[in-house]
Length: 223
Length: 223
Image 1 (cartoon, rainbow over the protein chains, first blue to last red):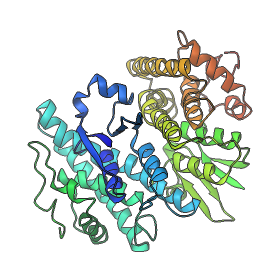
Image 2: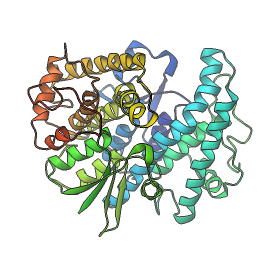
Image 3: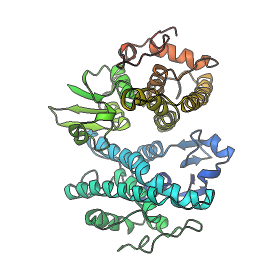
């Protein structure tokens, strides 16, 4: 049985959970708070980050969300998510990187810092200028997603792929933290509504993170 | 013919160049300065980052250094660099991420900011506290590499892999900018000396970046 070391609002843990859900791979979870990682956790992953996926019987420890996703894709044929010819696979991976790196740095990371870390760890009020900037950056990313969805059924092409899971993982955390203004993004809103109704997504949407409450629309499939 | 949009001190461009060198894939280069990316470049890569790899005749545009490396690995069998069973491939990708993300954020990015961007773009002196902190973080990363090389011939296992190329790419930029103190890191120094003598590495070591001069040992194979 796989054991996933994760954190409820870690978008990279969410990406792995969505992939394991789509592939119907069973796992249990251990919560690892990013502001209080244990020595044992640092030993599992010298980068000190969630997610880490462990299978004790076979002695397997996997770290880094993209390495984990590639491993699951290579070892579980069910519901392929990095699929197609090499150029298509490169497009899927380009978009995964765009959401993992750019969307995260521009939107998810500042929201987590202002709305979660400052509340739970630093006991400070959020910086409203930083929140406005993150929400402005989110509009830019959603504009690009709208454009992609105008041209393709799914973000990377004709079928759902890891690019969609990576985007949904980031957006779900940003939306939980009140950082997504859906006005003017009908294409992405429609894509995300379809996503929210998938069985792989339901467990994420029903979780709540300590005292931090999501906005009313967060878990509603019809927004 | 492949065309690589790159920047001489971009460690991600260097990783792709090392891989293309090892695989003996021909390409020409276009320099793209990160502080002056053209609209045409933003159209090639909405993330606005080097490297981008283009093949005009076949209409292929690849962006994101890890997506490019995976593509080259899938389409060119010569000198495999993400090789072995799935667990080994996951270990290679974990280490690539460690160097691309952690080493870059802790060491390479602050050195590029203090020693290159401030000199060429902002016309400011470097912040000596930020430089000391980056060099301290470099020691921590080199300690981990020393430990890996004590236990394995190459960083990820028994053969050279993309993990070695990713590490050498980051270290070569940090070393160019005077950020690596090799004292006390004999294992990594020996590994890097072997690397510097490879044909794939020579073109990188002989390049010079405008007015910024590397330290005397930078291009010496015997350090």
